[in-house]
Image 1 (cartoon, rainbow, N blue to C red):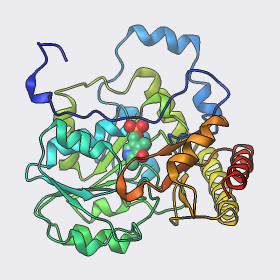
Image 2: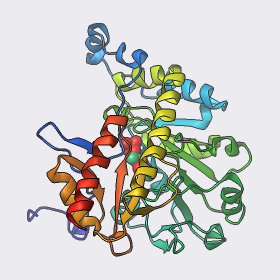
Image 3: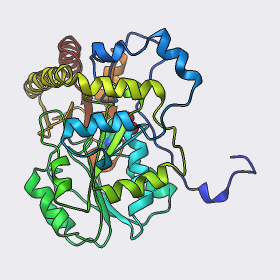
Image 4: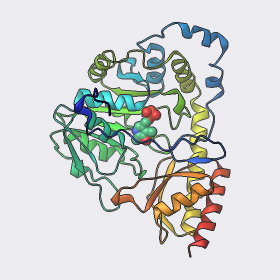
Length: 353
Ligand SMILES: *Cc1c(COP(=O)(O)O)cnc(C)c1O
């Protein structure tokens, strides 16, 4: 740290992303990206003509993109705010609505803690149950804002609408932020509930189920007043957060919804195939409703599995945290990726038995 750095950041611990390898040849199952390309409509956005327009600022209100998202989810454009990735949406929501602090589970998306540190927001950490499921009763009347990922990461466990309603209804004076990064892998979104609950804010991303991690597009859905509050902060920070190319790509992705649904269906089928194959190798894990599995082996430690897989050019995500140190989070890739994973794991199990 230089002698010029503001001392208030002394204790800040930045987010540690999954490894992005410099050399090629890795099967990358460590950051929950899609193994499939963006849709044809998205690819067709990247023309010379559109690139030439990069000399101009784009529409800072993201009007066309917000309209497209609103149309798809059958809400009004004033219920939607697109952003430059959902991490940005999460940060804005915490800045806006966590005046009394914020509660979230002990095992969840790492950025929540990074943002609460950055903005010095008091936090209440609520442990998940022994089996990593979230008990809605633990969130009744918290006296703070709440954020949880649904399905959660890295566990993949999902709360249904009645359980989310319970949390919303027992915290009427605080915003409940539902991070739906993985909702499209076989689950129901809570977006329709924004018409019933003025304290519900749903956050989604185009990074996982819409194959656009590199485009940085996320959005918030909520009642018009919540969205106006978020816009106030967004426009005080970076009104040009969704680039011109990303606006076009985002709109095209919404139009090509059928293609993305088919990618998600394929990933779900591959997930279930992989889960069964891992069971036969002595793994156990959560009932993941996401595009990843969260798996531990009966005898081989989690960090050993990660290291051995890396020797075989397969990257998975290991979290060195006490409660989940036996587990690896394994993104679902193509069928071929997962066949390779299973065959390498078979070798590793044989060596270690
Ligand atoms: C990947 C992920 C995000 C981040 O999405 P971006 O739009 O790429 O910033 C947010 N929340 C959770 C739970 C995630 O896993």
